[in-house]
Length: 95
Image (tube, rainbow, N blue to C red; front, side):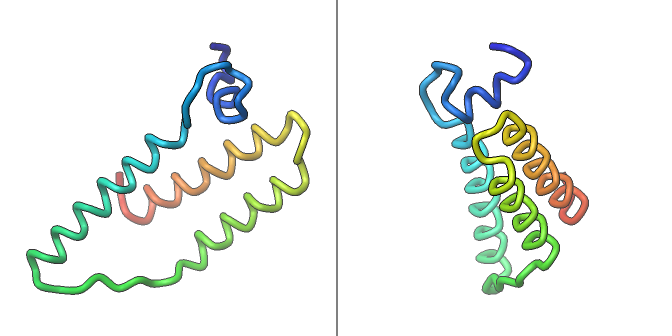
């Protein structure tokens, strides 16, 4: 796979079957399960809160998708948007 193998994988150009984002979902599900256990142990109910920063980052990613749809720049834009989400998550919640 080339240096942009993840991009080819995401767009289906790599010839490798599967979903490259599946592992990301597994990590998120693991985190949710851990949080559910913590809330259960402290006898509290989790509450959600809207995060304006993440909403803004998602909107930026949607703009990239519209602007660069069908072009080679789309892959780079999507990677940058995904990195922005991850960097915010690390800064906000820790690794």
